[in-house]
Length: 61
Image (cartoon, rainbow, N blue to C red; front, side, top):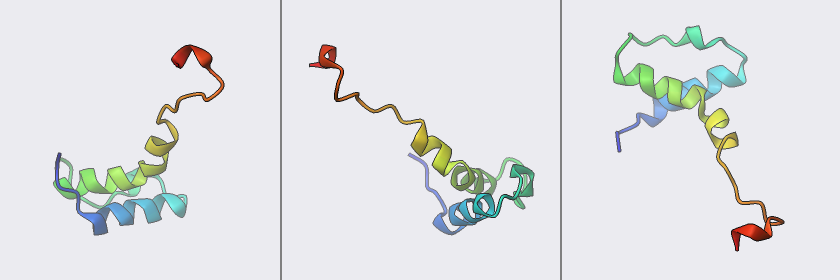
C-alpha cells in the first residue's frame, strides 16, 4: 500500500466539490502529489462503484 499525502488528497476532493476540471491538478506529471490529488478528486467515484451484496438475493447464502 502506498503512502497518500492526506493534505494533497483533500485538495483534490475540494477541487471536485467546486466543479473544477481534472486538468486543474497543479502537480507535475508522474509525481506522488499528482497521484494523491487525483485519488482525492476521484474518491467519491470509487466509493460509489464499490459492489455491495444485495440483501434480497437469496442465491448468495
